[in-house]
Image 1: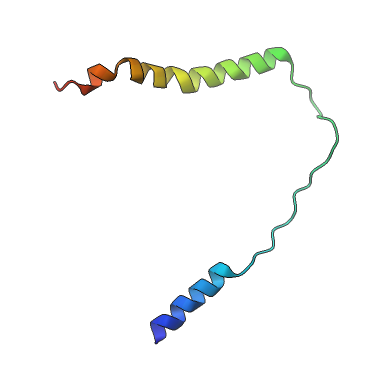
Image 2: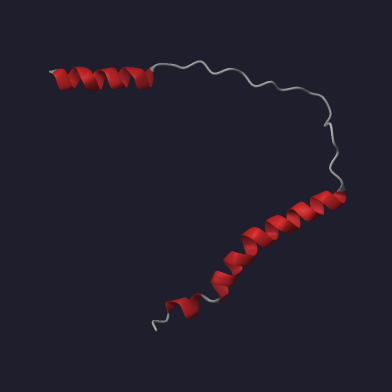
Length: 68
């Protein structure tokens, strides 16, 4: 019976509604406008860090399958 009380207490704590504060959202324009060059640099960096390693693995997949 003690185990049932403990587990019911855990369920009660998990199901209790927690109040979260609302986010401060404003409709003001951005403080700093991002230029086209900055967009280009950011997209290039994302391309290089994500797609190049996965492309390397996919192109060398047959080499990884071989047992040495």
